[in-house]
Length: 302
Image (cartoon, rainbow, N blue to C red; front, side, top):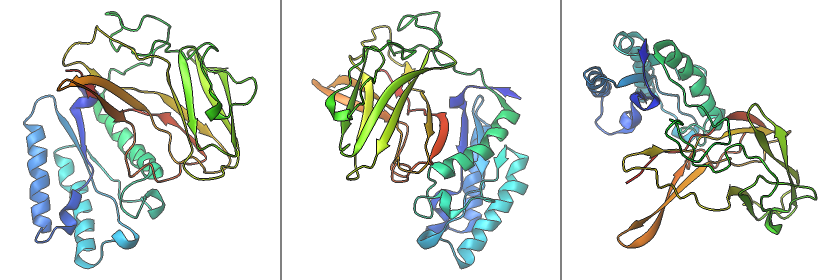
């Protein structure tokens, strides 16, 4: 079992677009995958997991020889590639309901794939773990190896700002150092409150009513930007919040974490966005109940 960090484990979920590329044969796909496998085997400190690929549905469905090749490829990964690197079967059990448009996984699809991949990872690799903040210490410290750019990591306090746009109910409170933004929430009221959590406070938002029109959103962010002079060029940062949705119906389109970095480029201020979702997840309504962690893309300080 190898002791690794997350950035050293990679997953090749399938043979990508080989199945729909003119002139691309199954043998070509296999050769390409084995080149990738051998490249990882010859690179110390880098590890690869190969997936079988997922079925296609509806207008994206494969038929005839293309479908037969896809199934053959799946069996080849499980029987042959598994001799070289860990493999994961994400074909069997994958359904159309787990896709956005018959091809790309939605939230349910991502959860399904994760449920198959995680046991493979835990069986083959050891991770040191990246803990979330568990105290209200300083924004940065040499003794906090994983850092914390959030000036109020426990989301504690009641001094935050809840403007009219969020339609907050009387008695609502927001954590110190935070502000909320809202738009297009006609017909919806929100209640903001705190509950005890394993560490610090849980930030809760209760939604009531029926939205008059699609497109409304709620945004919560720090009141002031975090100016962090202790970050050095080459440092890599990300945001990892925990989220839980408890509801009786599917009505939330997306719950997204976003890390923004503003810096000067060619003499002008430019903002770069690092998000936890992409266009294939956002158009799909989330399950009525959902719990997990959101991890943004990683930004490198320069």
